[in-house]
Structure formats: C-alpha cells, structure tokens
Length: 350
Image 1 (cartoon, rainbow, N blue to C red):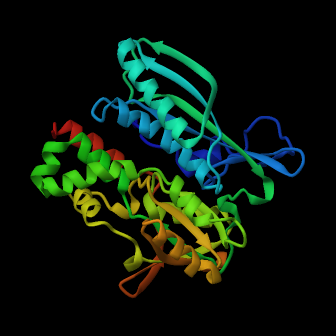
Image 2 (cartoon, rainbow, N blue to C red):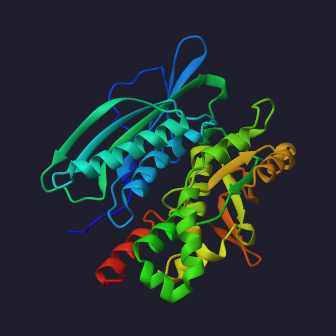
C-alpha cells in the first residue's frame, strides 16, 4: 500500500470532495475550492463570515511553545488572506493518552496566550486523550472572522494585469523546522550562524502583519487577492492563486526572494526552496498603479516584499521565465519537504 503524506492532491480533491459537499446553500458564496484559503458565508446587512480550518501541531522535537505557535499561526494565516484578523476560534484536541497534565497545561497556556495576542476569542471545541495516538497532529482548529462582504478578499478576485508580490522569502517554515528538528546535522553542514538564523525565523511564520500591511487603511488600497504560502511553496501558491481566479500568470525566477539561510538548509535536504512549504510568506496581487504604495508600506514596516510576476490571460497559461526561457510552471502535488523530513528520520540524522 502506498503511503501518502501531506495534503490531499488536487486530483483527489476534485474526485472525492469538490462535488460532494452536503446541502447546497445559496448563502455560501465561497466553499471548498482548490487554491482558496477560506470559506465565506453571506450574513444579513452586507456582512459575511470567513472561516478556515487547519491541523493542530504537537511536535516533541520542536517543543510545546513552538507547537502551540504553529497551531495558532497557521490557522490565523488563512484568515489573514481576507485582509482581516481572526476573531473567534474553535479547537478540537485529540491528544496522546501519554500526554501529561503538566504538559497539557503548558501547551494550552501558550494557545491561550497566542490567541489573546491576535485578538481571538476561543469559543469552544472538544478536548480528549486518545490511546495509541502518537501523531504530531493533535487535532484541528477553525478560526472565523466577520466583516463587510465587499471587503473580504479571496484568491478568486485576482485579475489580468495585476502585479504579483511575495512577502519575506521562500521556504521559511521548511528551513526553520528542519533546522530545529535536526540541529546537529544542520550545524555541521551549514554552520551555527545559519542554524541560529533558521531557528529565529520560526517566529516569522505568521503573515498577519504582512496581510494588514498590504491592505493598509483599505481605501483604494489596490490589493485584489492574497494567498498564504504553505505546501507547494511560493511557486505552488502562485499557481493555485492563478487557477482559483481563472487566470494565467508569468513568474520571473530571478526575482523570487531566496534567503541564503533557507537556500542552504534546503540544499542539505535536497529540496527546492521555491516548491517547499513556505509558511511566513504571502503572495499578494495588486493593481499596477498601487504597487509602489504597497511596497512602500512594507518597507515602512520592515517587511521584505518583492515583485515577482504578473497575472495574465488564462490562455497564456501559468509560466516561469528562467534564464531567458519561458516554460509551463510545474505544479507539484506532493511537497518535497515531507519526503526529506522522513528520509532524515530514517537515516537517523540528529
């Protein structure tokens, strides 16, 4: 039997889920769709509710604080793509039966702290301990926010001619988690300085500030769509945004923001940082006339942001310009991070 890791593929999503989503309700204006971070339900008086769900992390090699940070921030990142902060959170905890009461208290205190920092009220959920559960996935969270319907962004709203921007750089979360999980190997291969920088970048995984910086005061800000970079990396996220909006795109490889630390750690694990899990970066599309103002907003907030391409007509395809050659942008349905992580475990890398 073939073992599958990571998110369900686009092919399997279309076959098993996309057309089997329960009762159709007209107030659901954005439901499950490839490349769309949130669902949106219309509410009375021109309001709407955005929702997003993500797994909860409990990774012993990282630690309880770090696991709680991932758990909160990754779900919050999806809501951030709307241009708003999450307001409410539901948590389902399926914890290992061996998880001590003391560790649970520490873990939950951090969940509470990180939600409080983001302004999220925890409204309920489920907490239980499961015999035989040794997974690094400890359940799931659903975050919601309520805003004016015409102000909530989704990836479906990008349009032809929009500029594509990327905040921070490629493979932030991949490099950080690999370094923290295999510290001895990373130190030996790339040096202590890059190891320390990768570990520090773990707390750059949140894109809440990126999103709020992009939309600014919301008045004629010019932002049309945002997409959180997760599995498939920056290139995968751009591909998904183009598909979700029904458009094409051209991406300039030499403009992609590649941090030296992230690139060197990815090289150790033989993965391409452009296609590797990249939580911490945000893909943003905006009107050309708004580009300069938005880039200035990022600079003022000390967040790197780079122009990497443009949204094009669908019939032009989704392409990558590399060394003067334009070719179809390949979409990898399996992120290389997972294979690299488990291979390192099997080889007993420390």
